[in-house]
Length: 199
Image 1 (cartoon, one colour):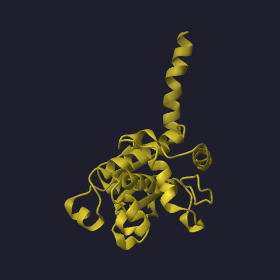
Image 2 (cartoon, rainbow, N blue to C red):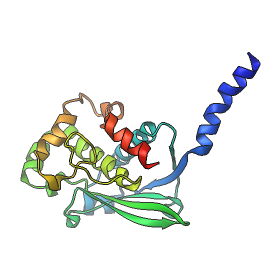
Image 3 (cartoon, one colour):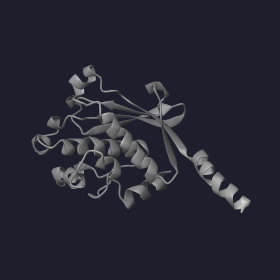
Image 4 (cartoon, helix red, strand yellow):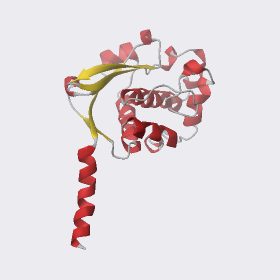
């Protein structure tokens, strides 16, 4: 029994040691950044939940660790203004010879077209759903996943068409309070398989 106990204790340690570690930093939503990007201080929590969703879906293949400085982060999340004209964008960076990324997330739903602006005008959870799912999508790119054509997947690209308002609304319908976002990853089994195949 002692030998079995040792194996059970060591297995999680071995998985952690084998994980691809991504340090990350999330730009604080200071008053100055908020004036430009219309972010909210609590948006950092949405980004953290999105990263946690990918970490859980990876089944131990990746580990995400917060750091205090952007320069120490392999993955860096910034809040972008409407001039980006996209929901988000991922730009690759070199991080000490390893693949890293800068994520630019647009949190201002009023800059995303009339239909999205109208849907989120009186529904804070719809707005938060968009920010969360955008963080989730862009983090998927950072971790090596490309766009695909499957409307059910988080890596679906709007360039293929489809009902964009409904894309976010179907996730929003799972929520009663904001903390439900943390409990509803927004990832399906195919998303998890694509991630594990990339790592």
